[in-house]
Structures are given as C-alpha cells and as structure tokens.
Length: 176
Image (cartoon, rainbow, N blue to C red; front, side):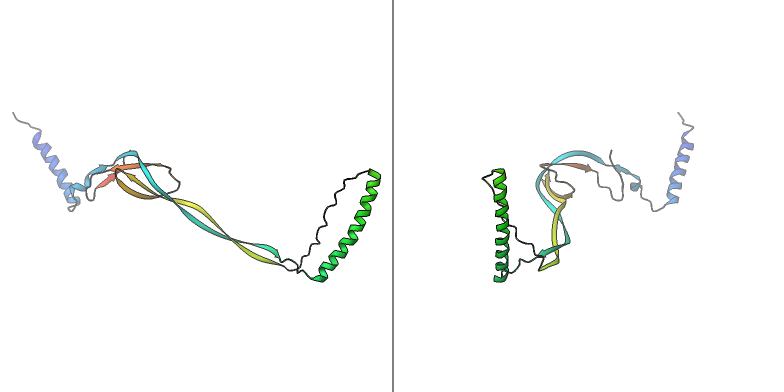
C-alpha cells in the first residue's frame, strides 16, 4: 500500500521548518510556547495591620493678647467706675421695682472693660496625621507575607493565587 501524497507533504513540512530556521537561526523552539497562568481566588488569615501615616503641617495666624498688668492704679480706677455704675443701676432698679412691683431682681455682674493692649499676631503651627495605607502581615498555607494595601482588610484578606510552570524565557499569558 503506497501513499502518493506522503512525499509532497513531507517536502512541504521540510520547507516550512527550513524557512523558520533560516529566518532566525538562534531561535529556540522552547520560546515559542505560551504558558497559560493558572489563577484562583482564596482567603488568607490576617496577622497584623499597621497604618502608614502621612504627616501634614499647616500654619495659621492668630491674634494673642497678654493679660493686662494688675496695677494698683488700674484697680482703683476700676473700683471707682464700678461704684459709680453700681449706684446708677441700683437707683434705676429701685425705680423699676416701685412701678412693676418686682421683689426678686438679679443684677448681672459688671463686665470688665476690654483692653486691646499687649496684642500681637503670631503664627500657630498645627500637625495633622492621616492614614494613607496599611502594612498587612498575613499567612497563607503556612507562609507569611507582607503587603501594603489602601484599606484595612479586617480579619481575612482575599488573595489571588497564580501558579505557572517555570520555563525560562517563556511568554506567560494571564489567566482568565
């Protein structure tokens, strides 16, 4: 039994191999293998979470006033002013009591005069710390890992597990 189509088929295959070899004589046939990545999702146990902080510094200007010095002259002047003000207010309250027949009047304490002496504008520095990332220690199948994540994962961390055979210089195609 003879196969008349076998010699032309072998010739065609031989030409194809010679053409590929002639195009790149240093090409290794192993590099032409495309390895498909095997991927699955699983959970790892979180061991420790440490926040990574960003420190922001800001300054603003505020007016700060020193308390007025307590001189005997200033206290004497204040005492006279309070006495004079107290007499007038007492007389006005008694006149009001007569006409309105109120007997339980409450006199508010006099407010000290505001002095704007000894005031200056100063810069006050403030420091803010905010978490920008989290360093997470976790264990998967007995091996410990550490990753920096944008959020605190809680007790469990969903992970992507990828397994591919090692073939030097191979093209790895991501799994689906």
